[in-house]
Structure formats: C-alpha cells, structure tokens
Image (cartoon, rainbow, N blue to C red):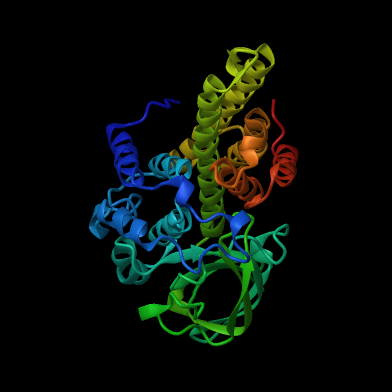
Length: 387
C-alpha cells in the first residue's frame, strides 16, 4: 500500500484549510456556558463557504458536479474541520450522499445528488440505534406495503436532525436484510423535501459537546419505495465510512490540542524554566505524540481499504474497528494530558481548551467507544482466523 496522498487529495485539504482559516475555536459556543443546546442550528455561513469551495461534493462523480474523490480526501478535510471545531454536518452529509451515489437507484441519484452536492438539501444519518449501544440497523423494522415501506422503531442521538431535510435511517426487513430509508423528519430543515413523513416525530436531545441532537421516532411511518436504498452492503459501507470519518475528526482535534499544549508548556515557567524542559512533562507529551501517530496510521489504513476496496486478512470492518479503538482511546488521553499540563488554566472557561475536551468526549463515544469496537474486532477475528 502507498499512503502518499495524490495531488487532488492534497488540494482538497488545502482548500479546507483556506475555508476553516476564518473559524475561531474560542468563539465556538461552549457547553459549559450554556444551559441546554449551545445553538438551535449549525454554522450556516461556514456551510455555504464549504459549498462554494466544492467541498460538499468531493465524493460525487463529475456527472453530478463533484470531484470524484474518495474517502481519503474526505478524511483529510474532516481532519482540518476538527482542528477548529467546525459546527457543520460535513461527515454525515458527505457519507450519506456518497452512499446514495454508490448504492441508490439512478432515479434517486439524479433527483438528489447534484443538489445535495451544492449543500441543499442537507442530509444526515441515524446511526446510533435505539440506545447508542445496540446496532442501528436493528432499532427500526421495515416492511414492504405496495409502493411504500412502513417503518417502526426509534433512533437516538441523530445529529443535525433539526437542520436536515432527509435522514438516512437503517432498518431491518422481515427477510433479515438491511435497507436505508430516506426519511423527512419534519423539522425546521425539511424545506423543499416536505413537512415530514407521516408517523415521524423528533424529540430534542443534547450532546456532550452541546450540539442539538434528536431522538427520531417512527410509528408506521411510510416512505416511498423510490426513497429506499435496498442494495446489499449499502448500510455496512455507510457505517464504515461514518466511523472512519469520526477517526479523522479525532485525529485533527488531537493534533490541535497537542500543539496548543506544546505552545503553552514552552511559555509557562516554573522555578525559572519553561515546564516543557521538565522530563515529566516531555515524557507525557511524547506519549501523546505516539498516540497521534498510531491514530494517523490506523486511520489511513481504514480509509484506504474503503477507498480502494482492497482485500485483506480481515474485512475492511476490521481495519475500521482498529482505527476507532485507537481514535477513541488516543483522543481521550490527549485531552486529559493537555488538561493536566495546562493546570488550572485548562479548566478556565475563557480559554478554548475546555471546548476541545467536550468535543473529544463526544467523538470518543460517537458510533461506539473503544470497548464496542474491540468486541467487533474480536468477532471478526473469530470468524476469520489469522495464520
């Protein structure tokens, strides 16, 4: 394998840095200073800039106005977004759109892809299941009834649901197959896609980072067959892309936090010397640097498997699980060390670090923490013995 990025992938990352350069992390709404959700909506101005820079259509083919890039390019952009705590549904929208292009019908692609690539409508994904711990595809049942599908169940912690026109909902059929239904939640973001599917309700939830989530309840909700992706492997591919994208967010956030810590330790003096010169401080920072490099290596391995479709000793899900284990544990250790080395200053709500800490905890547990993915990896190893 070759982890050298292509010119097109590097150009996407460079464009992302240009767009995110105008975002001030210390101006991001803080969950420590707000009761309830930090904001009713995401950063719409930043979303529009991403659309103008063609960063919402990275994975789309040229026939839909996209760049025809891959999961690696998306992860490079997500990495940059996390460094500034960008409050946009970039991961969910991009992953949902790429899945529609890859597995959806020609009619669905033609109807949705080009418009969504320009940022409207906004898509999100219900991927947390009923409780956040169980498989998302088992939280909702789907049965065919003529020209429609009927959905019943609950999906918790759906991100950006109040801004999205469509939510991609995984569901299980009577034949024990997974399908993806594009459901109009009926929230403020429904817009031109409609006022919401009948039988769909959303209850507000709040994430660790303070963002507004929603519990999506489906009670005999009917979705037209043309809005259901029934191709084999669609949900598995979407889930792997979402998890890998979350690893990219963890890496970008961790890199920014370690850099902040290094800058602080180089200026903060005790006993007449910068604390960065103390062996105990240097060793802790070095350990966190090793964590980040492991997070990076496993991330690009997982993204490469998704992008290339290459075979391996384990299915791509194994590489994705390894990446998420490192991302969850690594980002937690990085922010904890940062708080420790910053001392009381790190807990000051006028300083930006506490925002990164809240986001890190959200990313650590999103789509399953390290323990959940260790179970996935164990099951894969049992089913595919190595050697």
